[in-house]
Length: 269
Ligand code: AMP
Ligand code: MG
Image (cartoon, rainbow, N blue to C red; front, side, top):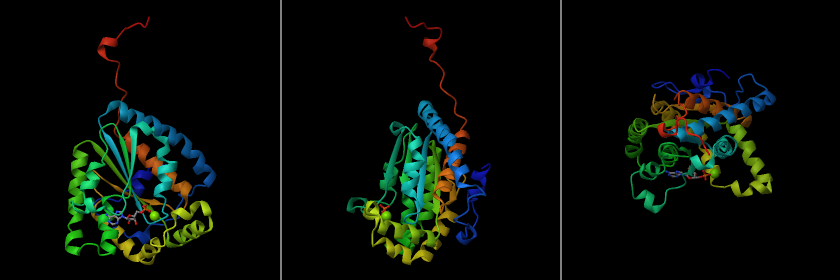
């Protein structure tokens, strides 16, 4: 598990070719070992989030992107549950409302960014504006092609304002998605998740991969890196996401705030 953060990070300026990244990679680990390794990581994550809150110097923004069934909800449920709900906010971005569409594409995003001390999780994000919007031709190319620079500038502003941005692309194979969609059809407790409209995105798989390759290549920066997470195995996905979050928060080298001066030597009677 060492150096997973370096290995999975998209190097700024590099050209991502997704077929070079194996979605079913498990780093040579067994599922049992992976599950065992997750527990201490989540405890550490809990502690680090409390430290983030206590120090109030930085915010953490976790961006989750991936095809349907790639595990965005699963990461919220199985990794972010390490966080104290009081210090954490999850925002899901759906098809923009009429009001949202009447503004620039970052308007709704900026409003949802976390304040210092808080962790924010985006389930989908402004990247939809260069993914689904591009593949479905929702705006002309002249409009979406300018958005990569706008996104980099926006994320730079966040970073300059103390927001630590971490972006995860949950990389699943088309075959794994087929199985997960078939499971949804079979399981009555998952019928609510099944949308016939999602099959339209599946039928444009290669176009989505091309759009993801551009987003990952153009927008992985030092201040807001992308990570390509092998996501065919849920347990490994959860493990590496947790590991990267722990390593990211540890790199801030936060320290517990000291007792206030007036409280030195005080005795509770
Ligand atoms: P889900 O994440 O399954 O709840 O679905 C949300 C849907 O909203 C997905 O189909 C996204 O592609 C879509 N969506 C999110 N953001 C945008 C956007 N900016 N423009 C168009 N569709 C979007
Ligand atoms: Mg969906």
